[in-house]
Amino acid sequence: MEVKKAVAFKHNVNVKGLLETFGKMVNECMDYALKHNIASPMKLNRVLYNSFKVEYGLATHYCISACRVACSIIRSWKRLVKRRRASLNNPPVFRNRSMRLQKELMRFKDDKIVITTRPYEWIEIPLSFGEYQKRFVDAWKRGEVEIGEITLLEDKAVVIFKKRVEEKQPNGYASIDVNLMSLDLLKTNSSSFDYQKIDLKKLYAMRVCYFEKRRKIQKLSKYNPKTSKRLIEKYSERERRKTNDLLHKITTNVVRELATQGTSPILEKLKGLNYNVTRNPYVKRKNRKISSLPYRKIQSYIEYKMAWIGYRTHYVSAKNTSKTCPRCGRLSKNNVQVFRCESCGYMADRHLVACVNMLKMWGLGFAPKALDEFVEREELRNESNILLCIST
Image 1: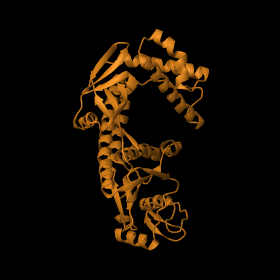
Image 2 (image 1 turned 135 degrees about the horizontal axis):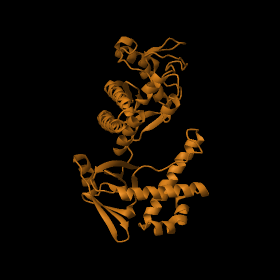
Image 3 (image 1 turned 135 degrees about the vertical axis):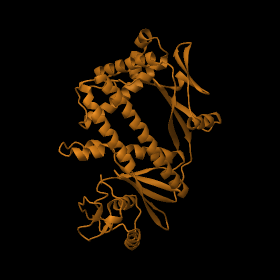
Image 4 (image 1 turned 120 degrees about the vertical axis):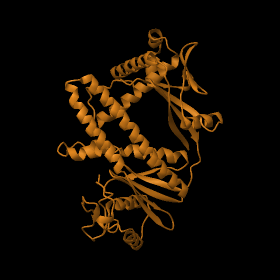
């Protein structure tokens, strides 16, 4: 299978004018496509090609790239309109200062990118990178990876490295339940299973801390809006860097352990959780907690890191995973940390119950006696012995 990884390189070249021009082209493409109901990038390119050549004078493939970006944005917007998450009377506008470069527009040359702007004209963008980026550049020089599309921004360039890897057959599976205060893993193979709970309290505390800082800064906007805006951007960027750094460390350790044991991960389908849960205006406290959980980022980090070493990530439905009894299959609405079945009286940590049910959905059964012995051995029925987690 083909796997891809995006690697960011910093640069200090002024490309603001080129990015603004590309943004205008994308917006013109979207206006024309919506007005004439065009969904195909190539059809849109055939219509606008000559006018763009006269108006902007850029290389041919800039028009093709702008049409592709415009049609992609329109498709995403129409999906949101269909789900009633966007208004049909409010069409999208491309405001990002970014540009997708196809292979025909650029060359990756050692420590710089050479970008064609007009026929027989180009600009060179030197890249600054550390050990992590150098590892991929060296692999590209050795022919182990290939270069895909490059996304150019004002201060960095995101390069897609891709390679073909042989998909490995796992020796076992690990269900991973992402929660607000913990990351729960239940690893199983032909002989045994192991339960692990990773503490995410530091991540949650970090998000709460920066939320309180932003709320205090926002009070300044009435008296000093420029300073308030500058501080908001400063602390938001700092929070993003710290959060990503912590998540990379956690997921790297998880992936390294799973790869050592030859285990393939099983995750829940959580797409749209933030939107669906936070629509209730009467539970603001719960909405804030759900919004502070980067669940999709955790899952995407695990997925692409496992794919890079040859293991596929599987997904199962998240409906009622922590409310279904793993013994009798009945539903019990429990909002406490310890799950108690209202039918058969079964008790266990609700996150362990979710992990067991995820494995069952994938077709891996558990003998009730073996599961009971494991729960008793790990003391997962006593609430005082369980890492305190606020359930999501």
